[in-house]
Length: 244
Image 1 (cartoon, helix red, strand yellow):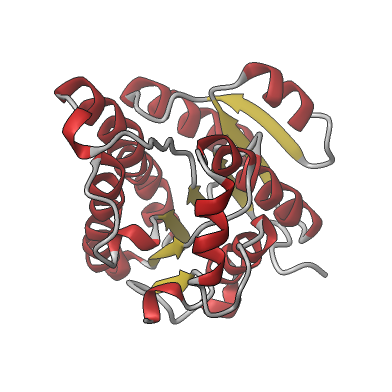
Image 2 (cartoon, helix red, strand yellow):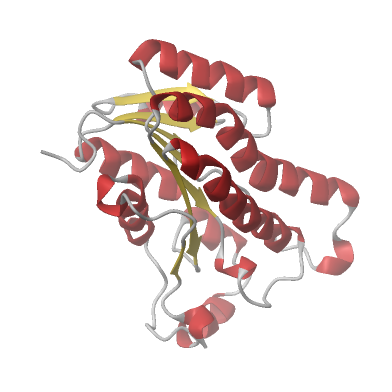
């Protein structure tokens, strides 16, 4: 029997990258998984997997969240798990970031997880059980990244703590996960210099980049009953980088 047998999970950004690995792992562990994503082509591919249902979602849209959570609850009778994983990144220096850049980043990376919790929590509180995991970043913990990305991930850290305090009395757990540099297509495309990437590896105590499955297994732990007394926690997965 899997760790998530008979659970219903929503994973945003679930059609590609780290989210795709989470979806596969959660399905393997017995969950019914809703891979929520804005990429329709990737969603079609995700829907071909066993116990996986691709659903289109713009995480920055209140209306999209309301419609998706209602559909999931109506169709499957409950929502047990929410993984707020969808996000965007940027390499713009702080001197070039304008208000439009800031608002776009915060709407997806900041408001997205907030809206997810806003719409999912009522269903979880009604059933007096649920697990939410918000994906932040190690840049929210250390002085690295004077930009809108770090600001958005700092927002995720703050709202995760507040949500854990607010929802815990209703049986809903909320935890935040802080990945370091994970080897994904997005990281490879953002990296302007292989030399810079190698420098980051050398500066990491474990001497490697993180892998998507490193994150997926940690999220599985926080979403499963193995962590039933853990809420408001911050789990850092960065190879020891931020410990220095």
